[in-house]
Image (tube, rainbow, N blue to C red; front, side, top):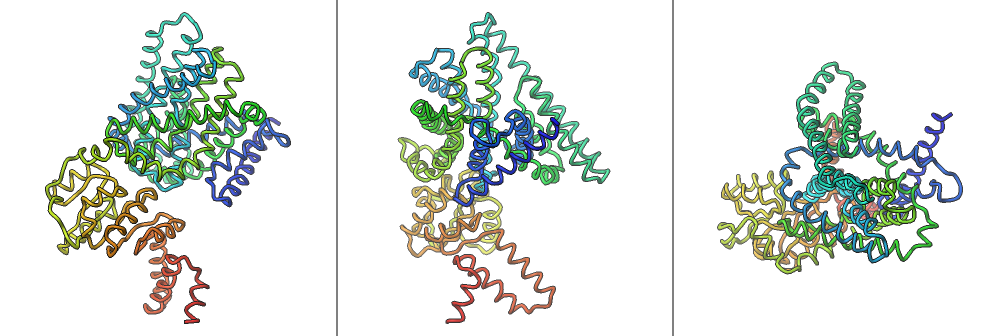
Length: 578
């Protein structure tokens, strides 16, 4: 019977997640908000049907492990090493400052010193899962803010180890602080070294051996085994389950099978990851929140505003540009799943009581629910951070001046973002001898371009002074090859204001962005996935013997309807009237 109850709870949680996610999307909200509300509805604190929170939580842990494993596969060790200096320095500032802020909030609320310090520790940890789920939903999984947020999340997860080690000391035990810290840090270090060293040597060989068998089922089994086995080993060593799974994913990302692993794991990852948000929603006690609205609201406000300022300020202090720093702060301005681990351990040690645990839990959930509104404020917050003293003058100095950009160009092209699209365009312009300037936020790319004699300006494409320095007032064409719905509309508006005749070409990640970019003033909008679909139409029609002229008309009508926001029927009827 217990097994059937487990299946029943799984089915109920998935059904509730589907319903909640569907309603959230219909209302124009992120699906994770629907998942949280679904968990709230089927949880034990609301009338009607109740799923077992412990069983759903066990399934959710599986989802957390698979999600973090998949994220590790999508990234790479080299990408994390590239931001290691930034995230280690920022973490060294952010974690102690957030602990101090949370401790102050607890003391002002009348909590004991020990409970207040525990609250500060919970405040210091953000949810990597919530952060990266948001970034993936916006198509920013490979953006600078994603790399830095993930790196900072790893630092926060590692900080959980000494925090838990110090709990007996906070509880008044006789444990020596230096001994406990050395023991926990030593265990964590050995575990990390074993995972990385043994993983990089054994995992690629294991995957290669299984791949030679040419069995998709066995390949999927060994992938899941690597993810869950490493996660469990990490947890037994005193680290977190999610951190171990993420490290396993990083190891796999260095093999030649990373794309195949990712394709196999994504369906399982997306299925079980929804249960994490459902399980969080099930923990909410609406009665307690209603009775303590001022306290929960005050804690949530202090948490969100405090982390916005502290994380954003820490990243600015270590040299991150204001746009990336602000976006990372926005996506990490909440409490994470490991805050529950810390507070649960603190409750077991008697540092906090059940009411204080409920307050921390409610604050964490409210901070996650608050994120959609915070994300909508992103453009205003980015603009505000640009106005902070010293920010506008600090960022261009990171890579110095470029002697080529001192020369005033006329009728040239400006390429914002030198990724795959920008590089292809730049190569084409080079071959024809057309002049262009690159605007790029990655200082490494800027230095590499300058070493090749290519004009390059470091900075955010949405910053007016950066575009002015690139010569936007006299440019003929502005190409926004890097898609960012915060800086891209700002760049379009500034370019159109200072140079009304400039031709502006931009990319769009999704159909929903086309109208906003057109309203901002873009002349041409390119959505890569849609254009790929048109090319498929062209090739298929050719195989059926349809003439090139008829195919061009068909493709042209679809393109016009898509980018002008009309339906095909509406476009056809309008043309008939003409």
